Length: 545
Image 1 (cartoon, rainbow, N blue to C red):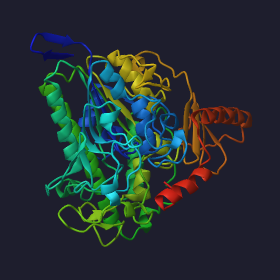
Image 2: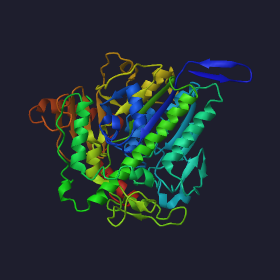
Image 3: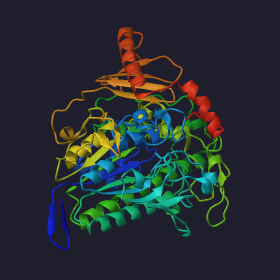
Image 4: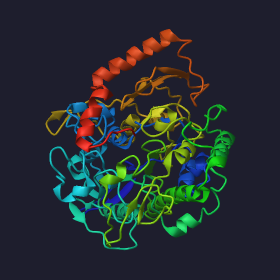
């Protein structure tokens, strides 16, 4: 609820404020409340006061998930079937379609003040090496301010140095970074708190989209935060992964005591690793980035309480995809980022054993074996649509509007976020916007589930990313890697996807595959083999993750 003053009168608005918090590349078991050794007391507190959804699904990659989250549509229907590059069809244009409407646009129509701090990444493609040629705000590079947000602070592309970001905007103007103590995670938090403070001068409720870039690569954290984890990862990824699985089971965060998936075939046994201190340092830095984000969330929540609006604010926290197994220089990603910081110091990219992760002079990732830990107990990673790539928790807190809940295991998807927020706020979804007809949301409201009702999903959930495909229909999941055969899993018994039932149930496989193909045709999915060549010409590299 909001109390606000105008020159003429005092008004009372019973609608909740809404904060939607999105982490970047954080895996299923990276939170303390989900079995992790990483310190996340503020998110843990949110979970203890609200509801935790253990079967929350995303779209396997940052751009598609963000498009889906903001519009309530599957990413292809929203125009972001792949990433930011325009691959030549409406489903793959790389920016939000005019036939979609964002949460911010709908809530602003309903009288909300709309705020965003963090990462946009649904407004076309950008090359960080050529900032002066960026066409920010063009028809094919829409900004948050053009898609419904009254205020914006953050980045429009996908990744950057945390200490020396190459392009930060405040509203529509570029912000020059000159502070040698700057860190983007802290700046995102501070900007969000400033927006909340300013919104309290109005009689409007607010919607804040708080889109952190942590813990996405590069591994950049304050040295004092990294030092907190000294020695913790010396036991290696095998021990840490097993410990997380045990903790998940002890907390009843898995519906059944599913077996943990085996260590990924591309991850060596820890006992065979020769640079253990260097490897442990990478995970220490990753953990520090998660903790720093959690600390920022704690500051935001404390500000709500100081303003006496914490109980009346609906807060939702989730991640855009599972843990990321991408390399840096080795995969070609680092070539797209500047190699000089704002203070003139030189950046050396790549996961190099002669450098330690964490500082502004590095540009590293934590790599596949640690991502396998992040996604415990599941298989695979960001980019794939097995559980490790698409499943991360949803934590919801709204003391005024919903009771405390134990872990909820019903499957949900990011397309459900917009319908949930609209039902909670009473906002009406338009039939058209800006002179364009808009698609109806693909998702279903989760509000009754969060409020304790006996809720069952009505529609299947679908995925496609770079030819990786899946369909979840009730307890059954059909999934395949690009170029491979369909696999079939009974999720209530085997959510870690260890027992492929495809050969034992060929009729079910064919029926579900036909259903998936009908959906794919409807939303405009194209063959990845055809799109891959287009992308290679645009980016000058092959995309494998």
